[in-house]
Amino acid sequence: MGNFDGMRSINAEILFKTARSGGKGGQNVNKVETMVTGFWLVKKTNLFSDEEKIRLQEKLHSRINAEGFLFVKSQSERTQAGNKTLVIKKMNELVKKALIIPKKRKATKPTKEAKEKRMETKRKNAFQKQLRQKISAHE
Image (cartoon, rainbow, N blue to C red):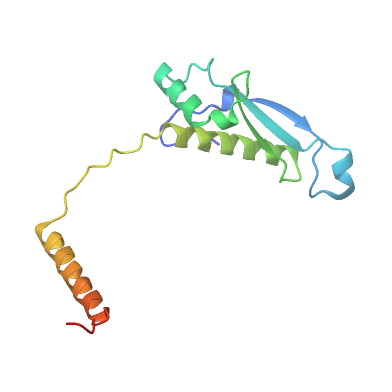
């Protein structure tokens, strides 16, 4: 899982830990460590600027533990290699999405036509409601 859109890849800085996982694999599950957890220390990376690191920490705060590691776990594949590939892919996608700066919304004013249409609708509604009112006997 290489670079994403010309961005830097964090693959070389990811630390991996394996454990036995549940799920698919039959009796194989009980003896092979196929679950893979990837850890990446956001604060210490040299791949991103200080501003980018702050953005990553803010956007991914729910996935970063107390020591400052971004962690991702995968146990859906039957092999350790498959799960490792998934962890790398997920981490790179998280980092890529976290670095995207959303565009500022430009406030717009309603057009003259839209204002007139709204007023016309209000007039129709008011007239409709007026027709629904009970006619009083003393008029």
